[in-house]
Image (cartoon, rainbow, N blue to C red; front, side, top):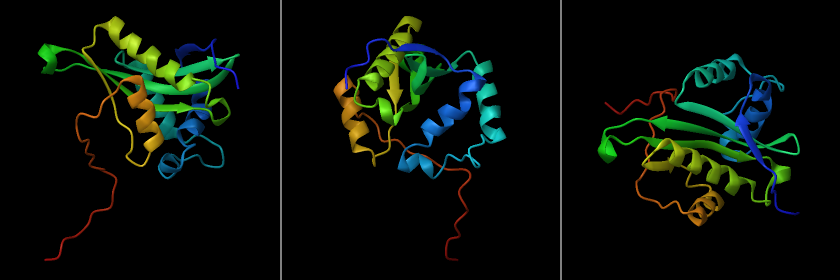
Length: 165
């Protein structure tokens, strides 16, 4: 498969949402938390999309190749006091369509996001990836990301556990 040279980037639209959600759910880890009801996009995704669309610090981006969506990512700008009040960019939900993998689209997408952060004056670009994705970890390290912190999550929708009394 030849490399993808003509990838373009744009803000996702509401019409793209079903495809984007299918991309997000396309790997085994995310499949357990992303839900499509018989192919229909639940209202919660539309509400989240509307919030992203309204927020000037958030962008849901699609990469297109030949007029078709080949991948997606979310880019969020986070103001902060650290780094002398510097803004940081957070890259989330990077996915490349299965039939487009191996063509360099993921690298183009992440490179594009880094350049957007640079143009905006961000001091840092960060992302997380699940430890169960060794191929993703290698991919991000190849681009230049380095492990620096241990990420932790507290799931608010998880069932409560009771401790022995």
